[in-house]
Length: 256
Image 1 (spheres, rainbow, N blue to C red):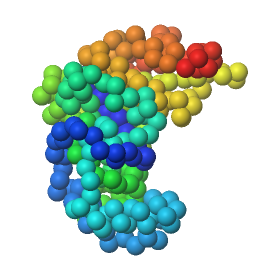
Image 2 (image 1 turned 90 degrees about the vertical axis):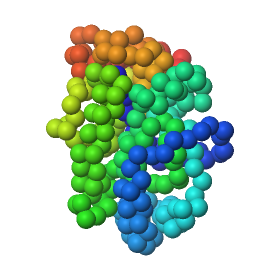
Image 3 (image 1 turned 30 degrees about the vertical axis):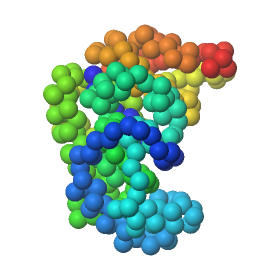
Image 4 (image 1 turned 135 degrees about the vertical axis):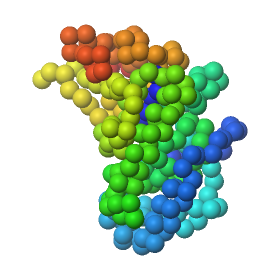
């Protein structure tokens, strides 16, 4: 099974002694960096809906791109999904397996392997950055991401794509160009008014599910039913093969 996750806005670029690999869309990334370089601070504020301080930071990042530090993507992203993934504690074996079976969707890089060299950036997939290919990044990436995922699945023998990404990022995967079935888990929290998705917890759970898939070398959706990290319990009556549902009781959430 091939797994995809979203990137994170928060980054950690403390040095780490891990060899990196080269991202696979260097020309596309360079083109987007050139486009972003032409944007002023006010433009970046509007494009990303961020503060002037953050816009200035990212203006400087694009301007100084060639001199920017690099770090393996799986260790550089630092958001809620990556708290659940906890890459720093993955075994060498799981990390090697992840290099072949885990992919990170990215507005700037398209599709990253865990050890691909990442430079500090901010550019969400939903950004309406206009290029010659269209009005936003979905148009820019087109079917490239889906075709690469299909090729990766064929190379590794994966028969399913485990979608642990957000809707914003998985929207960049052209389903018509994707030649393998998708399984998308849902993570619910037991609440007084009934089970609900809580974004913060769902993001962490998606990262934990990605880790579970790596450590257990998950091959089929049925293999996911054993996921219990954080106190989640598989719900057979709410689930289908391609849409498994996991519910966490309130007491398990408190304990976690």
